[in-house]
Length: 188
Image (cartoon, rainbow, N blue to C red; front, side):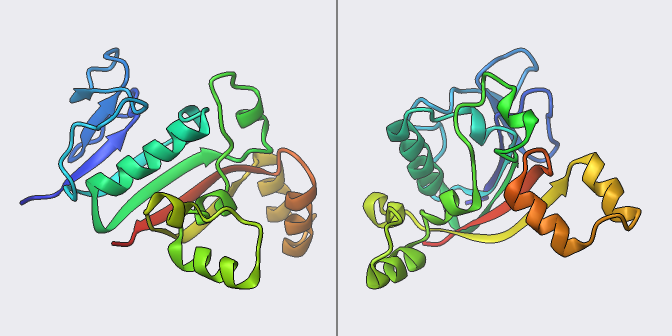
């Protein structure tokens, strides 16, 4: 069986070589489907890649629905499938100002769905919720990249701040990191 690539919540970003899916028919996606309605119209283990560009922060306001979304991603993806996730940083005005943003997406939040980490946390008595074990899914954060807000890109480029200062600012202040790109791998 040939595996497919999905562009979920595509909006106007119709990608060639992908099945483009959106809740609204405005931009004529290949499939009109609400990502908060289950099951998704795809077979088990039929997907090798999912693009989620500024989508995940818009869905699953209810934690039960969010977990059903994660379980559905797991069901339709094959072992080794990649989810390419792009989201606004939760401490940037781009996230805070949009009333349709219902959930901050963070690296730590995504690692809650990693069974290996869940087991380590159990052994050490960590308080992190073992979502991978509870929901029988397994995803691993492979990479995380940050896009700086233009102001901080310029300050760094001009040598007015150093990398270690930038990391300190990112931990303390809003509007330092504009966007996060996270590569999440399905482990089956």
